Amino acid sequence: MAASTHTVTNQAPPLVGYDVFTSDRALAEAVERHLAPELLAEVREELSLLGRASGSAQVREWGEQANANPPRLRTHDRYGHRIDEVEFHPAWHRLLGKSVSAGLTHAWGRPGGHVRRAAGFLVASQAEAGHGCPVSMTHAAVPALRAEPELAAVWEPAALSHVYERELRPVAEKPGALLGMAMTEKQGGSDVRANTTEARPLAADGEYVLTGHKWFCSAPMSDAFLVLAQAPAGLTCFLVPRVLADGSRNAFAIQRLKDKLGNRSNASAEVEFDGTTWARRVGEEGRGIRTIMGMVAATRLDCVLGSAALMRQAVAQAVHHASYRSAFGGLLVEKPLMRNVLADLALESEAATVLGLRLAAAYDAGTPEESALLRIAVPAAKYWVTKRCVPVVAEALECLGGNGYVEESGMPRLLRESPLNSVWEGSGNVQALDVVRVLRTEPAALDALLREVGAARGADHRLDRAIRGVLVELADLEGIEARARRLAERLALVLQGALLVRWAPPEVADAFCAARLGGDGGGAFGTLPHTLDLRALVERARVAV
Image 1: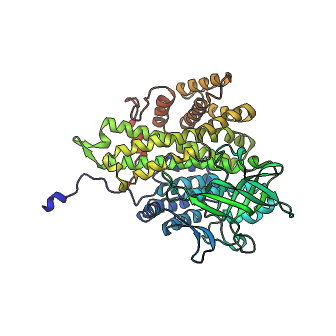
Image 2: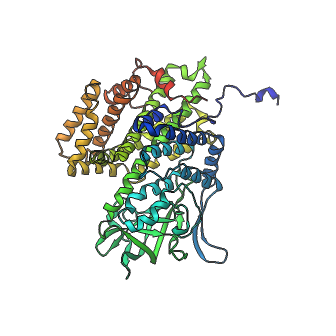
Image 3: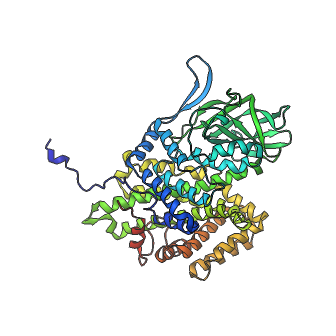
């Protein structure tokens, strides 16, 4: 075969060797907007360091290796002793070490901690999303642990540590620890009140033994888990360590690992508690759901951030490809219809990023008003942003054509990952019904949301009309459960629109209000009004390498 047939032309170079943070204008602007000026230089430096690592060829290769070599369960050692350990490829440990050392489990209690940590989580997840599970669980466990100050004194410093220590040892002997969660069971799923795992009190105050089976245990390699079980006074939260204080292993039988659609670098397991599994109560007996909801809310925000990360990476790849690939006499990015598609995708990505960082800033503020906003905005955002992730990633893949359907492009891994955050920590119906519950029981939450969107009233007539439409929806609560998804969607869209009108460049806010609030957009991406400044939207999303 003649050598000339192997000449490769008209292919985009790989998108590597760039700073994931500074190249994302929407994210960098949000960090600047929500942090105190005296923190900015330090935070920009730490996020840029993480951004350069996450965009490097080496870290991208770690992500590929971790997904190509999924975790393996080892129930016994060579001598027949039960050990219940999960083995990971070295790349997994490198990714976790990178994220923990970057402070992605350390948000609570440091200045601007949630904004800087949210931005870092969004950056690191673009290199590889699966390792974000233990990072997220560990971060989110802190508010639940604080319900039991004695426990928090031991476990919180380990959770906030910037040191990743993979070996299973007593927490007192470790410079850092990871935490997971085991709530759902076969018979109940999201209905955790149907849990049957039993907790029997021991003589020592706060100590119990557990008997039961957990259908999904997140991050089973962790040092401890927050677990729900039925105590004498009702459903209660417990901390289950893998290794007890005397160095012996707790009874924690990993029965199997789940074979999942995506998220293949990460282990999800079924676990058994055999009646001797030692646990420490967290919070009051019978108040387990209230105790663990702080963890659930924080992980729900990470679902928003994780989906925003997948969207941003998919859009970056699509714009990059179109900027180099020629077809029909010119670069794809210059073709009006492709430009429309890319601009529409970029718009969705930016709206998700701006909303996620605004909610992180509400955590940092910690005021009653901001806390009330979180109670309604987090489930609405989790519902909507995670729902948008799948079509965004699928359309971005299509922008690469057949190249995007090939595993080596990285786009199939993004697509397999894209449904996860909509399922994790309560699927769409759970989130929508949570919005309804908050509306019925917490008027301060709706007041906080209306104040937030009200800050943008009068700036765009389409936003104003959409806000009035939401108020009409809320005036009639008849049949609200059947309308819960519709309501959650509209609340999220109005909130995104208000944030973009206040803070985004005019061309971004104009396009969002036209297509998402004004009805001047279609059901598929690439249907923005042609009169908008589409070129500016695409240029804003482009990564300069």
